[in-house]
Structure formats: structure tokens, C-alpha cells
Amino acid sequence: MKPTVSLSGDLRCQRTLIVTAHGDTQGAEPPSLVRKLDIRRIFEPETAGRSAESSGTLPPPSPTPTTSQPVDLVLYVNDVWITSACARENIEKILACFVQSQVRLTVCDIAKEPLAVEEDQVVFTPTLVKRNPRPRAWLIGDLSDHAAIMSLLDQSGVERRPA
Image (cartoon, rainbow, N blue to C red):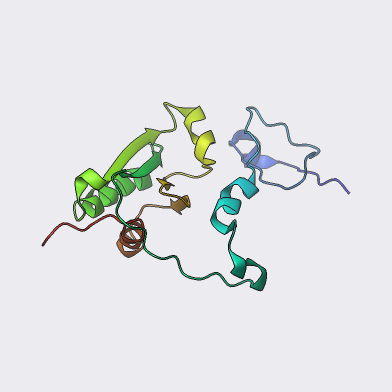
């Protein structure tokens, strides 16, 4: 059975994003193309090769030794949203606690570079993506959970600055 989408009233005038697993929806006529998100591309690199995968429980990640390559972070924002401004402010505060030469941060405004999100399969903004070292990680939101980001950087081998 094919799903149908019926927009009426105020929704006819609003931009709408419909997320569905169905390839064909009736009644939905999107005004612009949104490329298909391949969810396997997001999760497979993190689980590939782990023997605990079949049991459904994965061991906690072990810290990655510090390497000469900096940790590669990309913050995807949309400058019209206050949450994007908060995310920028929060990531700058967090990175101030770490050795700057070990982290490379790129901020990408999706309004100016709409196709940039394809490489990292980003759907929502703000989103922080840790590209390298593998596995990739996605943190969505205003990055107000400093502990989660600091833990991600610690696990990636980034050294904290001396207090």
C-alpha cells in the first residue's frame, strides 16, 4: 500500500520536509530535490568488523593514540537559526580547552554551500561531524552538552591544554 500525503490549510504555504522509507508517495510534490539519505553509510563504518555486533552489545571505544594528523571536525550551520550561533559559541569554548594544533575545525553554512552536506549525509543543523580519525561521529544540536564533545575529543586522542 502506497502512503498518501495530504497537505491542507496552513501547511500548503509552508516548506515541508517529508521523511519516509517509501520510494513513492502520492500527493507530495516537493518543490526542490532532497537527495536520498543512505542510512547504511552512516552506521556501517562504526560497526564494521566488530565481533560483538551479533550480540547487540558493542564494547566502549578505546582512546585513539595521538597522531600527527589533527582531528577533523566540520560544523554545519544555518546562520539564520539561533541554535547555529549557540553551536559556534559552544564549540569555540570547548576547543579552547584542547591543544589547538591537534584539531581542525571547518564551519560550513549550508545556505551558502547547500551541496556540502552530501559528503557527511547531514540532514539537520547545527550538526558537528568528526570525520577523522574514524569512525565518523555526528552530534546534532546546539552543542551545549560540553561533556559529550569533550569525551569525543578525548577518545580521538586530542590532548587537553594544561590548566
